[in-house]
Amino acid sequence: MAISLQKGQRIDLTKGNAGLSKIMVGLGWDPVQSKGGGLLGSLFGGGGPEIDCDASVLMLEDDKFTENQNLIYFGNLRSRDGSIQHTGDNLTGEGEGDDEQIIVDLDKIPSKVNKLVFVVNIYDAVKRKQDFGMIQNAFIRVVDTGNRNELLKFNLTDNYAGKTSLIVSEIYRHETEWKFAAIGNGTNDRGLKDIVKRYA
Image (cartoon, rainbow, N blue to C red; front, side, top):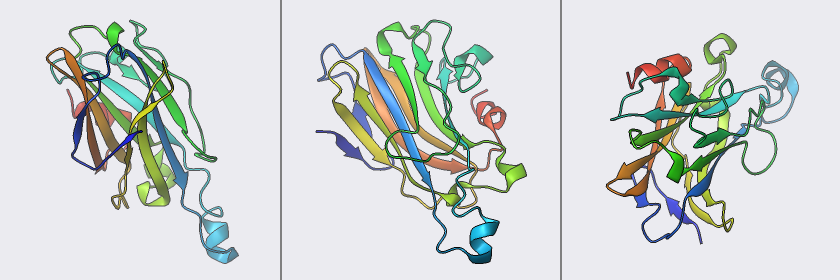
């Protein structure tokens, strides 16, 4: 049974999960549905299905972002070493389940990479006047691809109104093991470039 995490909690991923190597990290969200039609409904597109959230991963070396190839997102779907594969962009967040999925092969991650940072930002948020107050039911979950068991889930329940990016979670090395940290911090970064600068 999956472990449900709260903001700030950490959990061992590989310790106690012998042989765990390949995981699927699923991220999901839904646009907030406006109540009723009328002027507000037409102004906000009946709940804003046009909000385009993008999930990305930063591969850090000693907690630093060192090269553009270490950013895995809709414009660079696969890490150079093949350890991380983004399955592609979902433009609306409509529908049940994961909106975007990222496959991670922990055994293939280069030894110099000590941390993976999972972030979600709203594409063109400033120009479109959109923020995470217009998104609900956001979550991240980790699944063992070998047996399809969901290992953990973290629901992002804070009020993110006014925030344009989310630092969702980290998967990081601890000696010979991998751990997961539930972060859930909203930021005012305008896009991926701004997020990356945090780790420069």
